[in-house]
Image 1 (cartoon, chains in turn purple, green, red):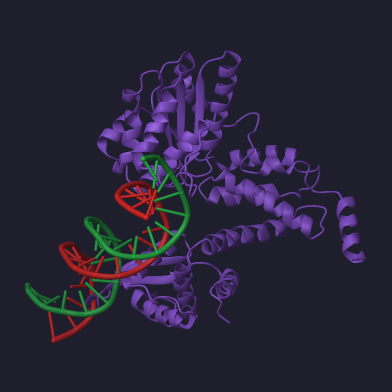
Image 2 (image 1 turned 180 degrees about the vertical axis):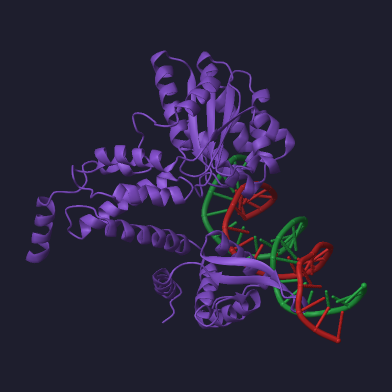
Length: 400
DNA sequence: TGTCCACAGGAAGATGCGGTGT
DNA sequence: ACACCGCATCTTCCTGTGGACA
């Protein structure tokens, strides 16, 4: 008791490395967005008519992850809302991330979420989708107003539920008497629009803006600016920021990742009682970020998924590469042990594809000629993650 | 040169759950 | 009580296919 008490005492007394940790969180909205002035100006030009209660052109934004798309859009919308409020312009901006599970990953939920933005609750299920649309139309058309709808990670939406919903959204305006709605799509995938229905494509991407990746120097500069706000003076040792931006530059200029890494490195350093952040903290942070991402993804999957992964973990030490059929056999024995239903191979095939998508395994479809076509699977994460995964799975599946 | 394996992966639909309005 | 809805998960049935082997 006394011991733990003094731990907290010491904890309070010791100076934190952080001055303002929230600066390093993804929710942080900086005062200015650097190196994106050009894109922001362009977007502002396109969206400005909304403030005169005219419908702006629909806008499409492309760029890899961590290139400041979301940040820039939030920045623009934020200042538009401010102006609108000051001048009592009936303007509303709605930002939705389509990647969020159970929020915006189906047509019903997306519209329900939009309705919620107007302050009305929609039950999570039960109503016909048409009905939800009607409620949305009604709310939208109550007053004369311009609504800007930002759909972030829009490629996730269409991959899951097709592009019909986008078609509906682009046609909303013709159904509305008072209001106007402008759509802004944000996509990580540069080729996203190519496999879109031509009608949707032409009306959705009336205007397009591309966000190029940041280069290493820009990343360094951004990181330095954030670090100054986030950490105590002298908390970061020389070379840490440089290495951090080098990591990010290697990952196609993903600044978000770099900022994440810096934050975790700070946490690691703090926990180890160090007064500064050094390179080894950064290395550990990188391992931790990677491991957390994977383990998080796995624990949120259904048991059957976990069974398949466990089967793979059992085979992996014996063979470097293995095939769908082998995995299925091992999976069956695991199901027997755990008293789970044995699913069909068709389903397992899909599960393997999902595992591949999550980056846990590396699956390649190969032909063994006479001996058929199959997935060649190899584990693609490093040893200490595998050990941790195995522990987590054994616990979750209640295997000894 | 054609055959044929061992799957991939599309389509449609069954099932069970948590919900709705009447 | 009832018919109906959305959704995740899974099954059934199906067509497609790269290339080693006879």
